[in-house]
Amino acid sequence: MNDPVENAKRLAAFKAVDNHVVDGVIGIGSGSTVVYAVQRIAQRVKDEGLEVICVPSSFQAKQLIIQHGLKLGDLEMNPHLKVTIDGADESDEILTLIKGGGGCLTQEKILASCAEEFVVIADYRKASANLGEQWSKGIPIEVIPSAYRVVYNKIEKMLGGKSDLRMSGSSKAGPVVTDNGNFILDWIFEGAQNWKEVEVTLNMIPGVVENGLFVGMAKKAYFGMSDGTVMERN
Ligand code: 5RP
Image 1: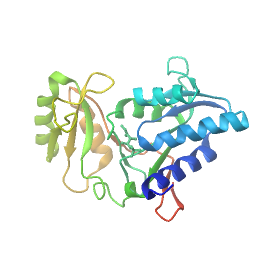
Image 2: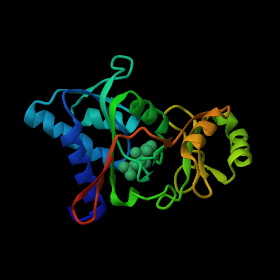
Image 3: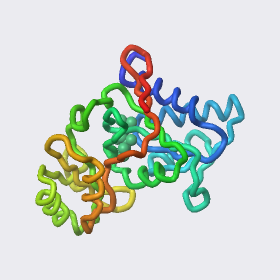
């Protein structure tokens, strides 16, 4: 594979699947890195007889599971997951994450919360010392559509910074609508913060469904590097 970023995603995903996926129910995150994880799971099912049920975090993840011929499950039937594997938009050194670049943060956080292990896979561009060093698009916040303006005002008043309503496509014809029928605000924050406090504060605002800060949830992260190695963080 010639593209160093794609190669890095694949290396991280394959290593995480090989180290963490065993027979049982697996949570499948969303995004471009997760594609490689699903490929690897499907390969192991075929080659080794691995027996997994995959619970998707999004429409995209569901399609991936179906396309790869894997068994599809849901949280109603399978509320306990052995492991959830997912990408991230940015991770600091203690695995505080920004997620939701693809707008699937609510289901992703639910899957992360009911897994014995939550494992992150990403390429080298996502690893930083402090949040905001690499990812400049802010923290995604899923909001009830009718409340987006109210939430926007409250965030500005309580936490400062600035929020943008995420628009769809290059023509920005209308707001992005999540799998849950909601809108996404991207909150551009100023400087370092107490991320646990921010996560809780955001979720206390009426109209907020969930936010893309994942604090203290990830157990392990694999970052594919440009030199073909994989960096691990605990
Ligand atoms: C989607 C997410 C993704 O996991 C995140 O955006 C990373 O995506 P990619 O693997 O394409 O870099 O949180 O809501």
